[in-house]
Length: 189
Image (cartoon, rainbow, N blue to C red; front, side):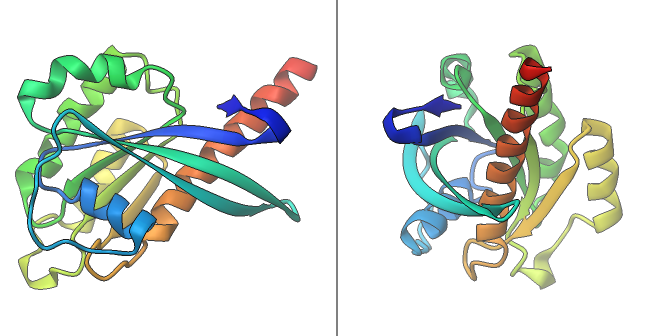
């Protein structure tokens, strides 16, 4: 967490997962309320900023989310370590209609472990929930993987319909905020 003048809070959130799972579309839906049907792969990283207001313990907290959309293609993996620096939270996702993207979340998680990011708040997400007829990943499998990876929060999203998109970003912001508050309490005691 970075604190700026006047108490401005900024959280850097990295969004990772295989190519074409909808990371960019989710961010675009959240930030610009738009959905693009054409797939345009992210080259390296794309960064977006979005303010969010959270109601926490009866007070409103304004946070600026810096959303780092990391390219999922293997040729960009060497850059990830640089992009991971200073992260406050992680969104790890897969495509509900493609089982290999779900299976690959294990490899993404290993990358996060290797780079020392597993102590950060993390939310696991399955995207493309609107494609019910094409769904290939069953809920019990997701719960199993979530348990294996040790990620307490899971959100199913649809960048097309907007289903749970706000919830996804609010959940990670809330988890980061809670962690930062606990760290402050620990330092005081």
